[in-house]
Image 1 (tube, one colour):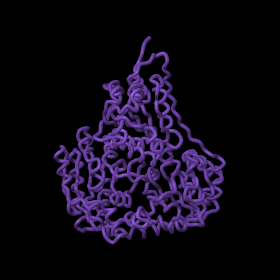
Image 2 (cartoon, rainbow, N blue to C red):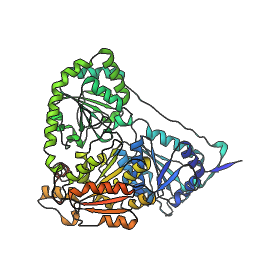
Image 3 (spheres, one colour):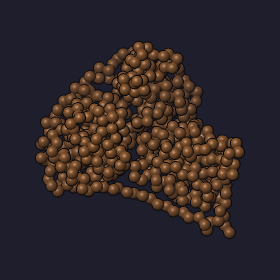
Image 4 (tube, rainbow, N blue to C red):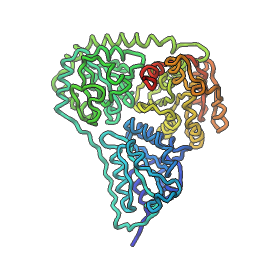
Length: 564
């Protein structure tokens, strides 16, 4: 009887799924899969830390809307990856996470890297799977992929014991399912009710989030907004699904972003949440007018009513629902009446938006030395002005400054850590973006604290030929924590918040990349031009003002971890 090993079955199942890259760090417990992927169409993309491998898979899932794949070895390989898994879970990113583990016959014998892995990760994933039978490996891989991508996407854990991978089974007893789920459930009746509520409103606001991006509904959103004359703000992966340059788009929905957000949320009488959650970004729902009606569209029922009562909960795919709403608007000829009704509201928001941005203009234009971080963010935003440019943000205050500034004109082209707020995503995200889009410009702006977590991913970038440009907003330490402590306590605890001056650019040069030091704002753009022209992985170390306090630092002091 012809036989096959578990490692070969796993490799073949991944190939059958059309996987192009597996982000990984090698180890003995996954070598049985490695040996059958060598010289195959799948590239084993090796990073310098398991956390970076999972962050790359998360970025891949965010950008492609298909499961990224990460694979690590047992024990410390598994535990090193957990932060990335938690990040993917909070960002609803499709991801398949494969981990080796000690053999079934060696558990509780104190074998190498033996630990009980599945119970640890179970609360952090959409589904956790452990395959105990060699012949069933293809079934479990199929289950992992279809679960990760269907409904509300998320990470799925698949544990493959090493003796199951090394085991042999008869080919005739192996089932090889390949089920691809493409489901867009829609509540057709609720579409009509949504439009009834819109028809009764005077000051509606739409917030479009990750669900719009994941359902591929950017064009549907634009038709809906234009058809009814509605104002819209965008959140998380929803950024760019309608360009910030659209006259009815008032840019990022985050309350601390300069613009009309506070005016819109405080003055609205109807909030329409499309594939986005009521979270810290909206002060847990408290930022919205208490008298406003609330519509929430989400594919997951558990999100309905989190932090705020919902008048019309709609469990539906955002894209399918928008298409039904657009059909009703067209057939009933509602558009012109709605546009006329909402025109004064739009005008008032435009005025508030201009006023809100003007407050920060002096900092965007600042010539101060050390460099004001908003000036640095503005220089990057202005330089990265092509529609297909990709900007990644990492760091506490640094992500805040960039989030306050970046104009999103194309979906999937601005990445940050999202709700989970995990530092260290920057270099892996940027490397993944350049791997996916080798012909596009990729720029990462990161804090000097956050860049240290996965610093050796500079070496990965250089070794793999991924010429990204990394700009470090260097305020000599953990700025967000330092400033929040100063606000809350009157002083910062120096031992936990001060790093000091580090020549990160020289470290990158030592790895084989290009390094530059910038101390004057006028030198930022020339440095960016030189960096991208070089075709090399480049670190631009920008010395920024250590005294500037971001809105996020103030929020952390007043609303975050220090609150009694």
